[in-house]
Length: 151
Image 1 (cartoon, rainbow, N blue to C red):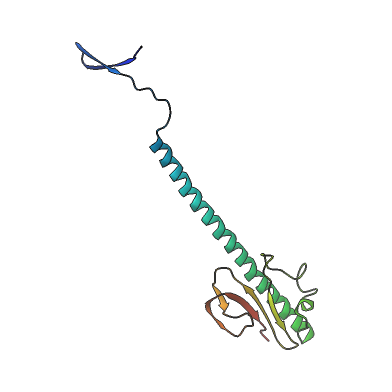
Image 2: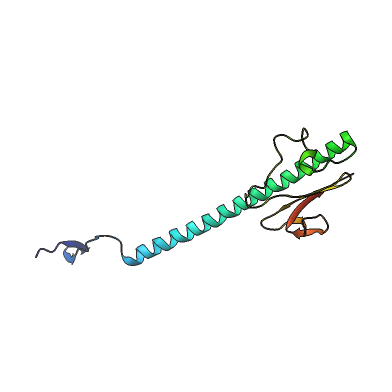
């Protein structure tokens, strides 16, 4: 059996020989610490990514509601009435087609008559201005973001 030794010099006249440690890889503790740190970082990244997606969808919902409100008011100025159903009111007053919710499983709520309209979007994390989808429960911190006629 051959054993390799490292030299440890205390003073120039004395030499102490110590056996060399062979580094064949990482210890189990080192691997567990590394895996734990990577898991924590991945967990934080996934949580932040999900929150960013949710905030982006809610921003689109709010922007859609405001764009629809502007289109409805322009229609009213031109025609002195609101048309029913709601989706026909904006033809020619908004670019593209009638907006849809960014989540396919949800849709925008709409109530229209010749004298009034109400459009609501269900937000994913609250922060809306109405507790109901029919523009009757306005208040802060609710689940719906609604717009209604200004005339």
